[in-house]
Image (cartoon, rainbow, N blue to C red; front, side, top):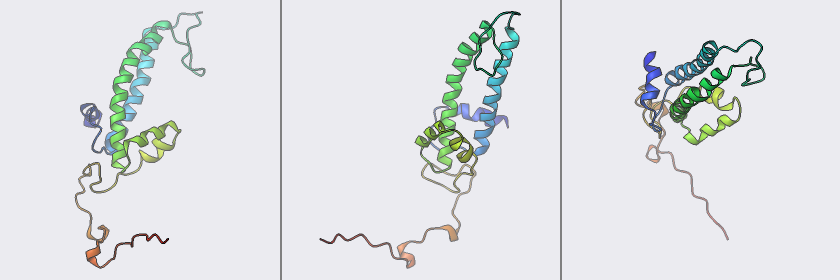
Length: 163
């Protein structure tokens, strides 16, 4: 399991190829947990003094001290840039496993569509245009292979322009 947390970091500049769900979800979950733990650790290390207002990151969260806010801003911001880049490369490889271009990553701007529907799906079996199957499935079974014109199936006729 630890290898799936380290592998995306090793491939941080690799935007080609494919990544399985087994590589995507443990890293994504660990990244989320890391940021939650960083926020909790910042609050414990720099508690809010009694009677002070503090700052709120969001309306629903309790106020934070200035020191905790600075930890999240500077340390968390630098880590967010690094791990954000790693996660971007991983997400694009995951989309390649589904047979989609990396540009489809922009669909995450529409809530729930990209993350929930696509990243949970199994990747395309066998090799696709982005590389070999990371599950190791090598050849398409005979009944799934596309038939060629030499198999007796004619190709569709070209459209004829009539004036």
